[in-house]
Amino acid sequence: MLESKFEKYLRYFRLTAKSSSGGEMPLWRTPYRPSARDGHPPLVFVFNPGSRIGPQALANRMKTVMEGTREVWSGAYQADRGYGARASERDGYWDFTDAIPVLFSTLDRLQAGGPHATVWWRCGHGQWETLPDALDNPADHRAWSVRAEQRRVRRREAEEQHERQRALAAATERWAEKPPEELEPAPEVAPCERCKLPITGPAGEHDPFAPPEDGRHCPTCRTDLRQTQTLRGALFGRRPRGK
Image (cartoon, rainbow, N blue to C red; front, side):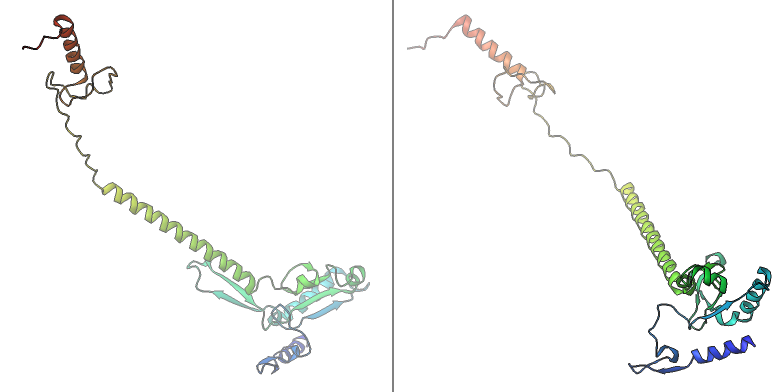
């Protein structure tokens, strides 16, 4: 029976031996270098349909082998229970550590394209692939790690955005509650002794011909007083000093 053969393969692949570092390693790896993928060595079935087996009969035979070996090539699904409360948010990956990849091909495909062409069908992938793609495990822990990191980045960005919004709202609230600053009153300007208006004169006006400030009169009054003195001098002249 095909299933019993796979059970023997699985028992052999699970045997361990001492490694050079003192730990344990799979026995079958002792003569081979470690690969970058998880799982046991693949088993390949090459069908030779010839002229007596049609496409439907070949498909039925491949399906029989695939269904009879599902337990050894499908791997174990590991659910990420820490992500998402709803079913639509749950995620996970397939662990192929104890799985045996099962590959199909046909003699006519290998003769036409060679082993490096797209002539390999791996159980569980659902399409013809090259050998490297067929041996790869695209749904394993690596892909899940990428998705988990993307979720961490999105969650961190959302938290940072929420913190910025919270800080902005708090600052806005503080500014809204802050009482308006009272303006210091402008210093009082002494009035002109003559006209009682400010000694600085009307706001925005500047008379360049006004006499210098005397601290008592506005520019207009200083000008008037100067003109009055000038006129008096012109009319009466300087009085002689008494002897």
